[in-house]
Length: 538
Image (cartoon, rainbow, N blue to C red; front, side, top):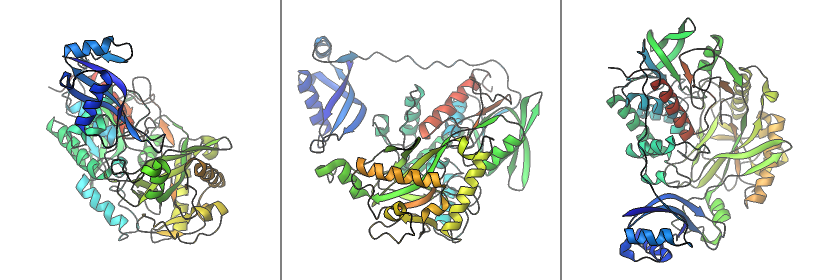
């Protein structure tokens, strides 16, 4: 038997595995019993023609030798023979570490850095300022319910086991191309993610399933010899001759100094206090561009109708997605982190802040669709000092808090009122999902003028790209301010800090990733860099 790879196979929406296999045999001109196995490599929805929507499949087909020979020799069929993959080779260093290898932060970058180290014999110490996933979910729910005005500063949507991605749509799409991605997806599947993430063109886990995956990844780290400490915050770093030798960890009312040979810094971009501490001790940083804006909510049925036309109610299609881009002068305006059938969530991590984000469960069965509508900003807008971006965001999030009201509600507006720059009345057709609630206001009062202008230009353009997007009663909620880090912690080609030997800044908080998968890849790459230097722990 041989395995061949074919692209652009058509799979009807109502097709079963058996009927799809039969259609493959018919297309290839081979008998049904010549097809031993079908493995879908990639599946994307082709909805370019609203009257004829289907799945476009890239697949590996295991065939009998005779059938494989016929397919490979047919000039009308574009097929490739699939070879066996070489096992991944890891080169281990020989240097004995003087102290522990420590990972700080248990988001995607920290999880996969620690997992890679632990399963290769390095017994990392993982410190996470937040709490385990079960406790963290309770803390977040208490804040969302309105029973407390401010979130727990160390256990919230930004901090805790799983990082900020735990309260999201769990999207696994990424623009990077890296051979580590397949391994990361396999690890997620082994820890409870749906198997389809391995081949869907736009895979997602959903916040409900992602919590299980995160907990199981941590258990694998511990089973392989790693130690995970929760409610343990990095507060200081000791340097000797320009190299990290120890880190200070606060655990409750006590602080401990841990000997450290290498520190993988996976703090997430919400950890502004840690970023300021690092800057004060001289860690090299630079400001970087990011984007800010609002969350837009529409009826999911409107998005389905706009994307799928007369087939919108087909049970195999599910909730439709979108990604829209436009220009406002020279600035880019775009939708970000779209959550089909999801909800807008309160994502503040400190006192007197209002921050919005979006999340969906795996089923994506909520009434509303939501996405960030954001405008690009650069250091020229907020300042060229590495801490200027942090100050800018602090003020923006406090302005949103003040406009929303002291009870923790978020400022909101209908699209129509926002386009007219007027005080908004409540939406008559879209019920906002943000908890503890929204206050309708003139939303531009908490946004920089150029951001308000950019969002208005974007909404008008998006209404032409996706029918109904600029509907009068769609709801905008502010402020979407944590699309990416406003600074970059500088590192060299070995992933080590350019100013502090033994410090490895990784993931979104360091300015080197933009989502769950890219952050996980970055963490794994940093772990591999350390593996190439040090010998495993005996």
